[in-house]
Structure formats: structure tokens, C-alpha cells
Length: 456
Image (cartoon, rainbow, N blue to C red):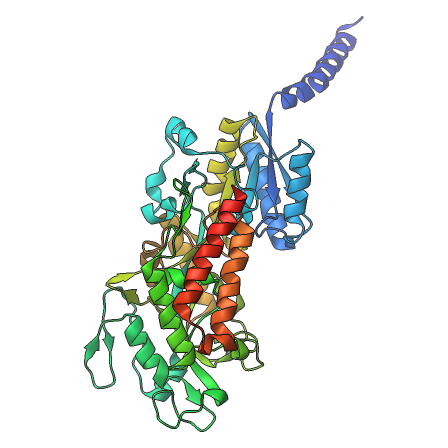
């Protein structure tokens, strides 16, 4: 064999060895599966961004292969994940997912605290109030990622028309009344100005003697798309279920909120009842219709204001007994307790929360829990909504997240949530005008107790 033939033979052997060794080397990587769909993440733009993240992560190191599994839609995702679990092929990582989606798989999430400790992961980059949302009796079940604090959206045009000053854009700042006097920006002050901003078909506002509550065309305030627990939590988050004792207690400040809401619905009429909420008056949605002066709603509502033609801005939520509470929706990624590779799964989680965070947050529409990413995110919102001047209130609102979260887990979660929803229906429906509120709250408490007792 001449030298040229020998060289060709050696090159061929090396190539064949490479083909044999390369798959073996690839197989040495730990495979981590990422399930998407239990929250957001299934539209085309999001899928493309997530696939790009997977590709970038796999190219960044040679120890882990990240694979993504997509549910067909959010609606079928719980069944899809249940099927994977039942078939003994659960994913390692799930997300983005909120508390309600996570609670459907209660008891199956890994405590991240040991991995945080062993890796030296810096939880200090997040507000303590946000990290506290993921603390439970099972440990640290998540790390803050996308957050949506409650804010006071207000229609500046309606305030101008009524000759009223705007709500404050700083916690602790007073509200300036029509006569120039200062008032504490609390829920009593909100109720007072909301009555002036509630107007009937004859042009009378709810503070006037001739006001007609059956013909309201503009309301002063609503808790838009609120769940009952979120609405109650504007007066403070509550551990209404004590896991140590198994006892359910509706706290006094939640009872006070229910009474404040009942009065606004049926006595002073500045909150829309269920009849108004479901009417054509609020099209495409209550605040976006231009017929609500103030709405307590999470930041994610910026998704859905495209048809609003007026001038609006955001203010801080009012206080209750000297403290302000902003019920906060939150999405993150969770590791399943069943994973065979917790360290590698945590490496992927750290990447999603780290290098790829801004790319994912942009397509998810989530406000960054990390302070270093917030300026870029706000710049994009400012370009989209040029009338809004007060984006600076978002970070301090996060610091006032109501703890525990209004979606925290408890036994027989779905049944319990349905019972809270039934109470809201009772309060906002026609029955709300005449119910014995304290008796109904006692009944709510007793029936929730029965639900958790039955769950064991």
C-alpha cells in the first residue's frame, strides 16, 4: 500500500471511529425534559423562542441535553401532564406555570432549597416578598420569574371630566381632594371619590340624592377579573387554612373587606354588580370599555387594552389600616419531585431564570422579578402605551405582594376555590343586597372546613 492509500485508509478509519464515538458521547449527556403548556407558552411566537432557548442551552455545555415537550394547548395540558405521570414518563421541569396550575399537581414539586444551598444560587436578587410566595410546608417550591402585581389602572379622562385629582403614584403619598385638602390614600378615600365617578343615565353621580342605581352608565371602581381570594387579599394575605392544625378561619380583615365590598355594591353603588359585569356596558372588558374610572387589576392586563381609546395611567393600590397589599400573580418553572436528575434539572432552571430570562419574559409578557431586567422591559411597555407615566410604581408594588399568595395550595384546592367563587356569586348577585353577610361568612368558613376535613 502506497503512502497516499495508507493516508486515505487512516482517514476513513478515523471517520468511522468518530461516527461510532459521537453518538456514545451524546448518550453520556443527561437528558432533562421540559414540559410547556400548563401555563402560557403554546403560541407560535413562544414556541419559536423556547426552541431557540433549548438550542442555545444545548450548545452552551456538553453535560446535559434539554428536550422540550409541548402540550397542544393550555386547556389539555393538565391531562397531558397527568398522562405522562401515569405512564411513568414524567418531565423533569414544568413551566411557565402559575399557582393554580401547580396546585393541580400538589405534592409533586421538588423542594429547591437544598439545591439553592449546594449551588450557591443567589436568592437575594429577588425581593424577599416574592420569594416568600413560593415557601410552603413542603419547602421552597419555586423561584420568582414572571410577576404581575396588582395596580390601580385609572381612566384619566374620567377624572378630568369630574374635576378630580388623579390617585397617587407613590406609596404613602396622600390623595388631594377637590378642595385641596389631603386625605390618606386608603379604601375609604377610594370609596368617596369612586362615588363621584359613578354616574347614571341622567348625569347624577352616586353621591347625589337623585342617583338611579338601576341605570348606571359609568362606575368608579371594580376589581377586574378578580377571584374572591384575590379581592379579599387587598386588605391583607391570609393563611385561612392552618396546615399544622387543619383549621380554617376567615380572618377579621377579610370579613372587613367583604363588608366594604358589599357596601360598595349595594349601598353606595360604585362597584358594578354581577348584572352589570355581564352586560354589554363592559365591552370588550370593564376598564377597556371606558366606563370604569379605576380598576384594581394585575399588570398582565396590559395584554388586553388594545381597544381602549382614552388616556390612562397606573397608580398605587390604596392602604388598609396603614398598609398596602398588592395581590400578585406569578409564573415560574418548577422541578418535579420524581426527577432522577435534580442537580441537572436545577442547572436548566438556573439557565431559564438567568441567561434566557429576558427572551422568555418578552414572549410570555411577564414583568421580570429580577431588578436588573426591569428597565428593558419597562422601555418596551412605554413604547406601547405612551400615555402611561407611572411605570416606576411596579417594583415597589412587588415589595407589597400580599403574602401568602391568593392562590396558595390547600387540601381539595379546586373544591375550595369553587366554594369561594360561590360566595362571590352570592355577594355580587341580586342576593347580595339582602344577605346576612356575617352568617354567610360563617357558612363559608364551616363549609371550607368540611372540604379540607373530607380531603384528609
